[in-house]
Image 1 (tube, rainbow, N blue to C red):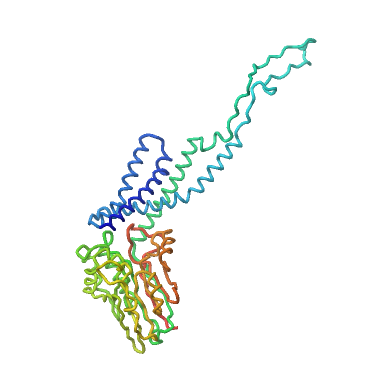
Image 2: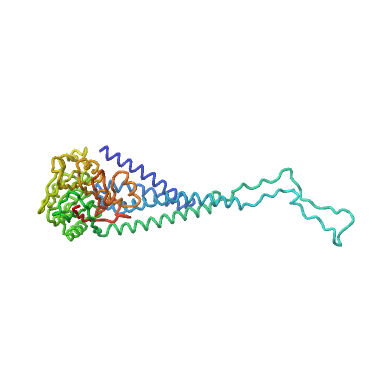
Length: 436
């Protein structure tokens, strides 16, 4: 309970600060005091409250909040990124304009100086006289007039120019963010792309060369993707005619009572050597024990810190699976136990480990794992968020290596939170093992 309250409080603080910045750049800097500024301020407050309300409300069954809340979350993210990126160009532009204004400022004229007096009368014309001609002088003052300060008409002192600059930045950020989110929604809601990757394993018997593992993760059946989404994924996997199907976590975002019917098409998965499942962190938010039983009932074998043999004529491959690291301290499931899954085995056999998070490879490498199949990262889901994922996970997308263990990370077939994918298309991968 305290953990949930702490999460909500932190989320409210962060989103509040972000919306304060967005209000400053999109409302205060682009409007003058009056009706439109009041409308913008109220809108910013409502949108700031919408984010934590969506995160909490969707978990409480208020799924109608999902579309508006998560779409605004994506738009908020890209507005923040774009406006922060524009800070330096905006600052440079203001300095350049201020400098130009300072150089263009007129020279001060001192009243009563010689240059301010009228021209001397001509002595060559008929109006010339022999005697001196009085010349009218402007009345002088004891002190010269103050010259205008350099740069006094620069953009920081010109409300019109400052307003124009702020509005230009806001329009650019708004249009770009909207375009990115629109493209991202189309990508996320579309069918997953089917990728093929060949991975050589030194210990793989030649008789098992070409063994194919259909790998999918992060299906995220939930408020925005239901039964039709599951049916599309099952159909795509079955078209691959794989030897093994591996579902590596984050299948659902909700309880069995809420989503059992949406997950039911998984019963139709087909493969030569069976379909297998390991838990992801979202299973621990959704009733992991019930989902383990439900997935098993649907015909997928759940590997909870277990290993089994995949036998083919002329060779054997070990297939292992560990619980997600989120199980640590959950009190409802055993934490990942690499010793139970990988210890006491024939080291001459190749072993493929199913583990939801790529970071599990740091421990798996100690047991000589040849290949780890993972998900969790969504490939970053929304560029440039992938740069932050690198701080937590050793591999974000595709094939990498951790301490001698090859790690393949699929982007996942669904999404979490915003129904948006930019720079990381939804994916199902056919991993083809090759004998080295």
